[in-house]
Image 1: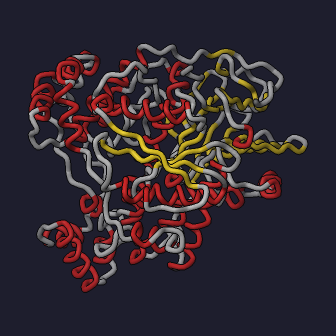
Image 2: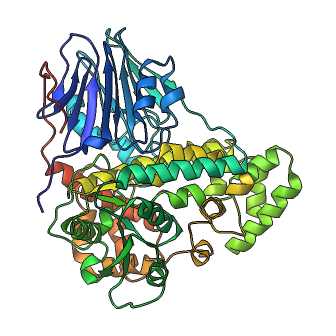
Image 3: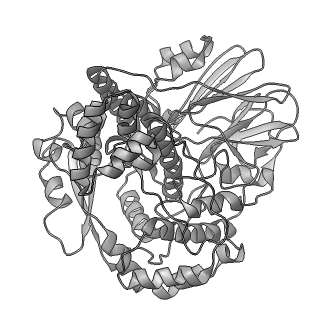
Length: 567
């Protein structure tokens, strides 16, 4: 399969001063410069121009022509554009020379900036922008990623000199070369009924704008992906793909997929064999991405699945990623209940969660009384023994409320999932994660705690919102299969090659000590109980460094003066 050019967009400071633009980019506008790189579906690039005023929506979006025209002239862009479903970035240029770039609330459409001689260049790919800042990896960010990928260094990204635009903020540029950031989104509260209605609308529209009129596929496994498949089937034929062990003929996801009898929902199955084990080499080189992608250790399986779907004609694939992050929440609300004085409710919920986890309720109660919300939600990971640099201090505010902790965690995962989209792009598939849409996040976080957190029911908000769509057996399903055994086996089969990765680029940078890293690999290969996240992060980072080292960097030049159009 022919690899395609990386798909991303960007722009620069308005005005007549020279500014950089990537070689080969297609200019959507010349002043202010806004460009597109790679192949974009025309329906995912929407623009309106009226005199000196211009507005563009870049990415899948539910916006109507009427709303787009209204957003062109409204005083506050976010009041109109903030509720549009999908995953996109909104850019508006006004007659006074200002340019506003609206970053999505969830962080699934990351934006970055670089300061250059002519002002500011912004874009949706930190990798593409990095040559403007020297093209060096930010080793402190990388060390924090290896320490705990869910707690990276705030205000930085994987590339030195490239700054992330915070999710839910608007970047404003002017002709003097100045740039400013201001928040446009914050969580709101809705009743249970209104929150469900908002979720149904946001997720339904987010799916529609991705599958309508194109050949599309979707994962078909747990409740999250099944919901997407059923929503997608309302807009035309959709193929649900179920992964399963090669020798399995029934059980688990297979039985649940076969139980669905819905018009326009077709099922296909992807058997997993030894060639798909984690860490297995493949003839498809790992593409360079903004940061280490979560699927890097299973690239052999993921790349094969993408190629099979592309060969079958699919151009768009939906995943259920993000569903667990939205609806399978840890009981961080216990700290909020304690702070509000709801003692009986807090104690009762702590007992329920302790029984579910088969542990004593005392640690949960103690953390709630201390207001230590962040540590209710996730285990505290010790620095891995192979990390050679000082571990960063815990940046989680001990007294933060449940929503603040949830948002921080969700946005980190959503941003990292963008690297998955870049992997799929390289093989000609547009990958979509509707659960990471800003409007979906807005709906979910607005629900009362009782609707979102439950030790007695599995994903109650999702199950109740789509109760008329999901069969009862699927609503009552409580979990999916685990693949930890595959990681042990994959490491054992590929141990020689993986051991070599331990003494590679990370070691040369002085970030890791190869000996303890290799010892951990040996132990995992033998089946010892393994704390997988830091080990997988180290292997993903090593493979990522190799990929960017062997990939040509984006070349930059002064932009042409006339728009080249969109295709």
